[in-house]
Amino acid sequence: PVCRSSVPESVVACAGVMSTAAVTSTLTTFARTSRRARNSSTTAGSSAKAIPTLTAGPAMAGQAQAAAMTPRLQLPQFPADFLWGAATAGHQVEGNDTASDLWLLENLQPTAFAEKSGDACNSFALWPQDLDLVRDLGLNSYRFSIEWSRIEPEPGLYSAAMLDHYKRMIEGCRERGLTPVVTFNHFTAPRWFSADGGWLNPASATHFAHYCERAARHLAAGIGYAVTLNEPNLLHLLR
Image 1 (cartoon, rainbow, N blue to C red):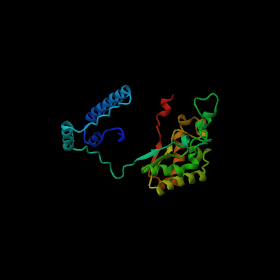
Image 2 (image 1 turned 180 degrees about the horizontal axis):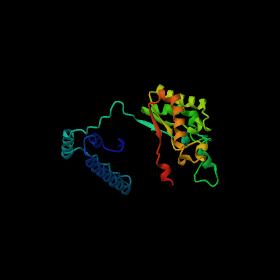
Image 3 (image 1 turned 90 degrees about the horizontal axis):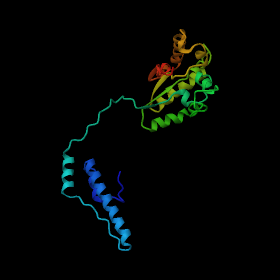
Image 4 (image 1 turned 30 degrees about the vertical axis):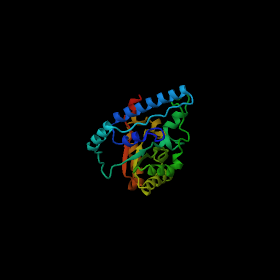
C-alpha cells in the first residue's frame, strides 16, 4: 500500500488501474525526484525548492484505458461445503500428557527432545477459547486429536471422564458452527502400548481397534469426519 501523505495524488489515483510495472516506474521516478529536491534544499540552505508533483499524462491515460478493457481474473469457486480449518495435535497443545510414551521420552536423560511439552498451550483447559479463535478467524472446521493415553491409560481400562471431555469439545465445535474432524491417533500412544513393542507388536492392530471402537461408541454421533492415523509413515522415516 502507498501512503497518501508522501505520494502525489495523481499516482494514488492511477495506482488502481495501472500495471504493476507502470506503478513501480512512476514511484521510482517520484522517489528520485524527491531525493534530488531534498539534496538541493540542503545545499541551498534557506532557499529550499518545492518537490515537483507528477501528473497523469497521455501515457498514463492510455495504460488506464487498456487496464479497464482487460478482463478481470476469475477466481475459482469452492464448493459450499468446502472445509476451511485449523488443526492441532493433542500432545503438542493439551499439556501434561503424562501417561503417553512421548512424555516419558521427553523426561528421560539424555533425551532427543530440545524441550519438554510440559503445560504446552494448556489447551486441555482452554479448548473453549481455542474454538472461539477458530470461529472468529472465519473458519468452519477444527481438526484435533483425542489422546489414546488419556482414554486408555492402562490396557482395557477406559476413562469415562476423558471420553466425556472430548465429547464436550465435539459439542463445542458444533455450537460454534465448526465441523469437528477427529484424529484417533496423532503419533503418541500410551506407555503400556509402546513398552509392549508398540506398532511392531503383532497385537498392536487389535489394541488400536479396541480403543477406536470404544472411543467411537462414545463420540461418533457428533464427529464430522474421523482420521484413524496421522502420518503413519513417520515412525519409519525417523528410524
